[in-house]
Length: 135
Image (cartoon, rainbow, N blue to C red; front, side):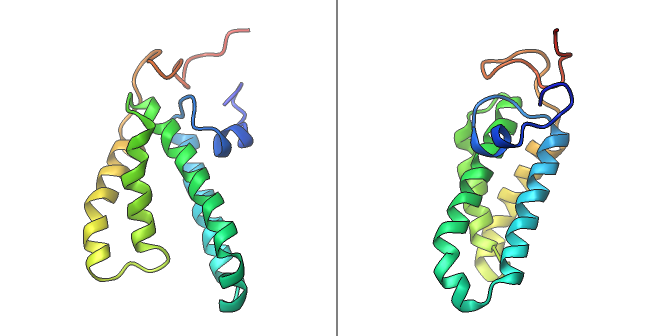
């Protein structure tokens, strides 16, 4: 974020930096909306042809968003891996053992990234995204 504006390209295409909770929730909602629209609009044949192009981009974008938020919490971006696996285990339909296995990871992810505040001040990943911008 820069001066209250979201840099969408950096948000979805770069894992570096930090991200506060508000923009994190906006980014997560945007990714889920895009995925849901893709599932709703494409038929089985078109989905079979385009799946390998659309979902890798969504997963990579999700990894960037999760990494930034994890950085704000003082964690390595590699902690995004179990969250992404949990999403893939239940998308587009949460059923059976996969849903049971993914649930604790989802609970941890929601609390860690969506509820708890980031580290105050600068950390090894950069300045706080809530710090006032210096002119």
